[in-house]
Amino acid sequence: MRFKQIIRVQVIVLVLNVLVAMAKIIYGTITGSISMEADGFHSLMDGGGTLVGMLGIYMASRPPDESHPYGHGKLEQMAALIIAGLLLITGFEVAEGAINRFLEQTSPQVTQLSFAIMLATMAINLAVTTYEHRKGKELNSEILVADSLHTRSDIFVSLGVIVSLIAVSAGYFVIDVIGGIIIALLIVRAGYKIVKHTSNSLIDASILDTDILCQLALEMEGVEDCHNIRTRGTADMIYVDLHIKVKKDMHIDMAHDIAHKVEDHIKTQVEGVRDVVVHLEPAR
Image 1 (cartoon, rainbow, N blue to C red):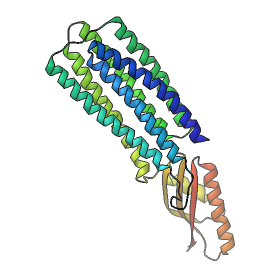
Image 2: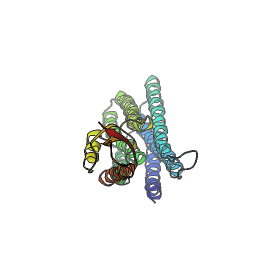
Image 3: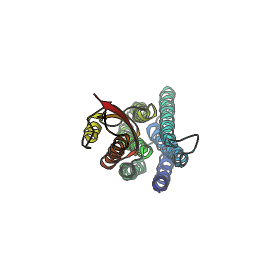
Image 4: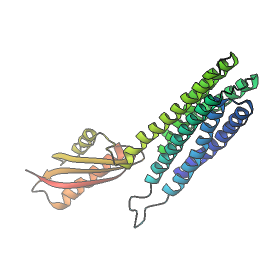
């Protein structure tokens, strides 16, 4: 059900991103505006990233099997990394196009329709990124959050394009080239942020405060101490591994019951915890 909701959000975002991208690319090409055309390709990468995300979500939704006992959830993070890769490639291509245009010394045309298109697409981007980010947090989806950060960068890029258009209309052609390069840098920065955010879960970085987990374990009667706490996973699929100490003369049945209580207590108190492995040790 969660994965279907995520894909539904992505379909809406995809349609809007493609419409925004085509408006910028077509009119930017007609008028010769580097920054506007570059911004259009940036938006098009949003659409491409969303398609990758949909494929990742579909594959990640498959249930655990014998070969993948922990499920396929990390495919969602891998899809986010592909989105980041698309951003990085786009950023370098936009920068190359801006430099080539500078060497050719061609000046773009600026019309009132240019400004109208940029303002309209900015409004759409603002609505899209707000909606997608809210849904990403609501559904604990890293792919939606990553994609919303991608789309959010479009707003700042579009502001830069408007500044470039104003400068070009005033006769400062070089500002359009500078705007294209700045856009390229913003695109690369957005890709880097996604890589940084996603890579933590792929390399099993700790995701929860271990002190809080220890405190929760100690709240259960019979737990003398806890240590060696490890966590990994994503916000909606957290795996916890910890050691607890019980009285050394305690019967195994009672100790086992305490371990189950610790597991249930942590799952109840911490949102997103999927599994808790409790190791029993005798207290000295």
